[in-house]
Image (cartoon, rainbow, N blue to C red):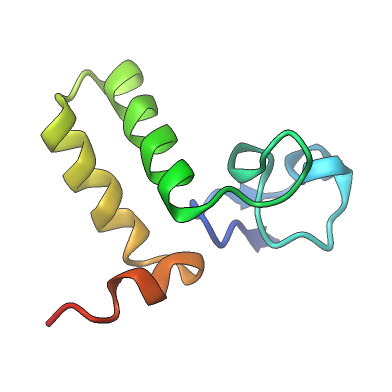
Length: 84
């Protein structure tokens, strides 16, 4: 089973992959309409909005949660590698 490199979601079904193409390393939720992977900024903003809507955290708490999770994911390592 693959895990999405951009959000960590387990990808078990073909429908979890953009275009039902299991060669992708990212899931449907991290894909743009054209099937390409969202940018760091797009993913961060979409994920923050998702946390606010589904878990009720405010903007700052949601941003902290998302960035903490993103630091652990392969797709975003370079965005956090310069931190001490």
